[in-house]
Amino acid sequence: MTAAPLAHAAGPPPTSPDPRLWNADLAPAKERRWKVYDIFALWMSDVHNLGNYTFAAGLFVLGLSAWQVFTALLFGFVLIYAGMNLMGRIGQRTGVPFPVVARISFGTFGANLPALIRAVIAIFWYGIQTYLASVAITVLVLAIDPGLKPWTEHGFLGLHALGWACFLALWLVQALILTKGMESVRRFQDWCGPAIWVVMLALAVWILAAGHWNISLTSNPKALSTGEQFRQWFGAVGLILSIYGTLMLNFCDFSRFAPDQKTVRRGNFWGLPINSTAFALLSVFITAGSLQVFGEAITDPAALLARVHSTPVLIAGALTFAVATMGVNIVANFVSPAYDLANIWPKRISFTVGGMISAVAALCVLPWKLYSSPAVVNYFLGGLGAFLGPLFGIMIVDYYLIRRGKVDVDALFVADSSSPYHYRRGVNPRALVTFLPTAALSAVIALVPAFAPAAPYSWFIGTASAALLYRAVSRAH
Image 1 (cartoon, rainbow, N blue to C red):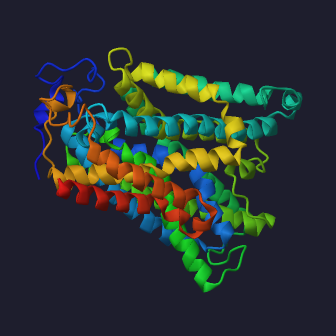
Image 2 (tube, rainbow, N blue to C red):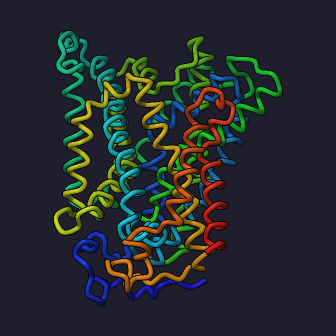
Image 3 (cartoon, rainbow, N blue to C red):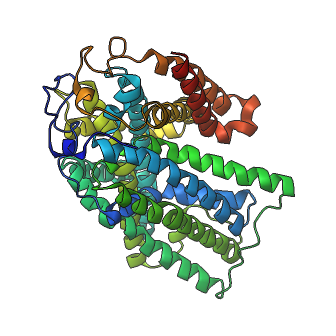
């Protein structure tokens, strides 16, 4: 399998690029500094957060044993590992970010469709993740200094004063990191990813000691029939694929900085099936311990940490949760819209400008109001998220099966009909004909109550249906 020469990664395309398609951030990566540890740390940054902890703990609360959660998530992360390697190879070979990779299958201007879908999802979740972390910080701050309670009695735009202070503090620190570009992102996630392990291991030892050094991994708070256990197990696999389908789509944003494909594969291996499954198992272990020690399964690590009556531990925990959330936000919810928005107007919007637009938009949407609205989270964000599977299916089939890995990187920055990616006025009609019905199918399965049993598999169904349809449509032409 061949691809465009890696010499293109040394700078701007040698042909005259169209300013509507090119800027220095969208051009092939100039330097390939990301090593195995950088990719591994990226996954630690993405996985080690409150949401993934609660997801794994929630599976335990629903009735799966710790070992069932472990096997389900291990299987899911192996599938994710394979998908990340497929998209990672494209980024590493071409050296360009996701919206430019999308031009291969959607057209030079048609690529704005997948880019905007991915950007909107990321912006909303950027705000929501920052808000959820600020809630955890608020809980711990009040545990450290109960005298701040009056700050929670008056609010503005639906958030009390202490909540605003914690939210804005997190928002400002993230914005500061983001203004320094991708190299700053690499350096930040290299150390923030491992940070949460310190608190997690400390929590595990504490809960183990409180449980007299004997925590059961076979019991659970809810008895399930054998059939229901199978349903929950496969549902967990489907949901973990849906969660990581967002980053799977734009993993090329990071793999473009790796010197070779071996680096990407090894970093993904240690970061996904190994580290991610270990983190999930430790989350379940701590939750099982909370059930044994306190008589209830506590799925919020901040709430559990608040029961530790030690101010230094609470301060360390608050800082660690803040760092962990900034890590996942930067990896999953900042880099993508920064590139996606730059792709819309390259002449005026750089990576940094696109990132700051995303950060400001995430603040302006008042994420605490979004999160408190099930309709918004389930129907709007859930519906958009269902579109990611078809996008992934189209792009993978186009690159590997239609083009056999052969891409003219220079032509991705040419806007006229001389480019093979111009298609029809810059849009590939075959990609649209495939995307529209399969995205609708995926959204219906994800959102319509009648299809609730199949909802966890909406990403997989969308990916498979789009891949098959795009292959058929391409053969017919």
